[in-house]
Image (cartoon, rainbow, N blue to C red; front, side, top):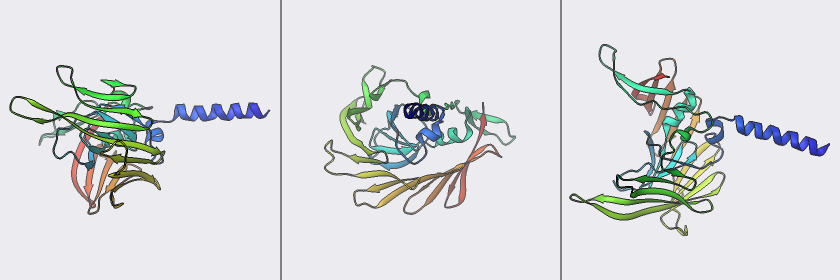
Length: 259
């Protein structure tokens, strides 16, 4: 009898996992879940230690809209948030003074189980790569040991008619369901940033344990805060537009249409 009850409970748990959507599985702000992608999407910078070097979308997506990528960059993919809210394919567009569409974006595809299933070119089971036209890897993000990832930009400077090969790497490690650490050294003897999930919020601290960034979701809005400012990305479904606010004031809006 006990065995039957256990099997029923196990089946119910599996059913919940299989039917959970992208938002519930990856973006609950309760735990981190890792996958690789090459999602070249609009994003909000969380940490930028790249010193102006070229960005490559060889991403390690860890859930809660957070990603790490070359070169020494962490960001929030807020278009994934838009997808979670709309639960449909969508395009963005701008209009002229007469209200006619003058420019449309590509289609951003909705995927119920995993948003990043749409961005799997040059993705392997243990890495994401970006290659140049010769097939040479320019940047990659790869698993190097359990829960530890090396994120590298191999070409960081451009000279006259040539690129100057370099190796600009950093490392991130998932130390628990709710914590990542960032270091320039693979032994993590010095922690530069810590990313934790606390009370349904993503909190980023620097090496002095100071909070430098906080992000959280409230219904159709994704909020993030720095030491000086509070920002909001909002999906206004009534007017079919994405809205951006800084300290409560609207500073940008973009129309969208679902497919």
